[in-house]
Length: 450
Image (cartoon, one colour):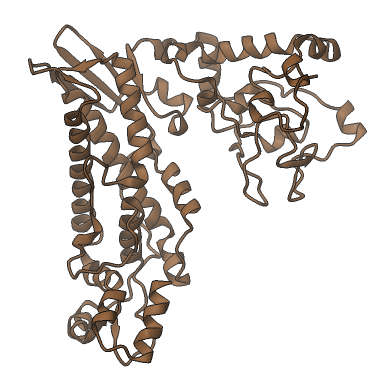
């Protein structure tokens, strides 16, 4: 069923771009229509256009809204049904059953490409690991039917009104991966207004602009770091120092039990900044921040922050920027929300992970970073030639608030800790190297370095 271009390819490696199911660009449209008795290409095009009508002016790639990995409802797919609404990035729950959509195999946790491909699906509706998304027999195919009706009111409103509330704003700024349809009808929680002023215009790609972004990022990180130290982990500073400097008694073969708050803070900072090690080679931990030139300090979140920056540039059609306060405010707000939510995600796993003495892999950390993307929409437009107003919509679950965990307790006794702290010795590789190279110390150094 391939088109003329595909038929000229002599080997089996025709590439993913010719297997995609959104525009069906690698397929012969007439042959598809003959076998399916409908124009599938036209059907896809009209369906996608209807779904994207409220946001058609954002000029994003189609795979931004319909990712190239399968999203599905367990209940729908058991009956052989999958909808473009399931695949739509702004929908996280099935519109027909309101169940959370899957995007990875429940058994092997791999993504399933939204392509006509056997790369992950070894057999129809069956992952290569053996997990069956649906088990079909001849009877089930005969009983196949569409779901009765859409139950999600936000989806109904989006399709029936064409997202009228979305079009009320001149500009919408958000990350599609962390935004839901229902947020577009919520009332703003924050309104910010800025007055323009005459300044020297600077090209958007100039070193000065990039330097400003770097400074904003560094200041936001430091503000979040101070907040966490003063409001959340202020009772656990000695615990943090013990973990960060790998302190223990010289005659004790085991390191002290890890405080969950220290675990969350130390590994939040280590992964966010993407430092080489979680431990510090200096007593004050000043080596934890090492920005270079115009790079962002929060290296893990750099792609997300730069994505938002580019979206803002594109929407405002900036070739040069005269007043950058709007830009500064949006980037600052987004960065703070992102960093703090990432810490809360570390806090949520700290109790079990500290007990198991286990740290997530970088793949798991990157998934945590994706889950930390702020559920936030910025609506901004110029009231006149000078005034700029921003309305901020925050999802209720995305509000920055401390997640309390009554079961998570630090077992360190502060009074006893003050007495014992002086007896503790650092076992970071640098500290060990500076001390006598005994067999025991060498073994500890090898263990820590690994």
